[in-house]
Image (cartoon, rainbow, N blue to C red; front, top):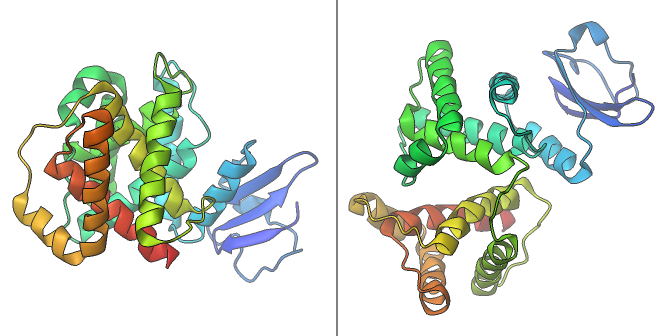
Length: 278
């Protein structure tokens, strides 16, 4: 196999007779260039992603993610496939790898994000939550970093989202709400987002969870961190003002009242997307 593209020292893109392949191995691209032959003795993992869009997003993500996070994600996904009865969509490689990377880096900086859906996740998705807890235990064992049960819940949600059986979910209404929030955000900032980017993918993943709560009227009524919300309002003033417009729209059209926690998380996601776009 020949190297078609180098993502970083540890990940390259190649191809066999029928598929583009993403190949991982420590130092596999060191001192190599496009067109060189791969050293197959260094290959640890080969990704055969049939969905071209998912493959492109995954490649974009891997340009920045250290190999150790990729290995953790691989172990988790392999473990989840054995434990869950429903198959996982290929998008799990993007969403979960990205989440683990950002979650661990966030904890290193002393930033802990509370999972406002944790109680529901434990009750509704016990198998996925058990897998999330196993991952948290593994990361504590390997890196002495305690992600906590909130992150176990976030991991469980990514597994739920990636399972191909969607049940009775109203996909049309879900999509409509997501698109409305995106359009409001675009209009407020007068920006066009790159919908192929991994940052836009992160944003829409967050919106998909948020839109489900809107559809089923499951507002979060727990206690919010007022101090953190005030800090976010000050740091991301424009993004927060955009969220207030979204809140008014949701109240008028869906009779949904956003909690302070939901405002906080949506503000952070919008601020990051706009920053990367600008």
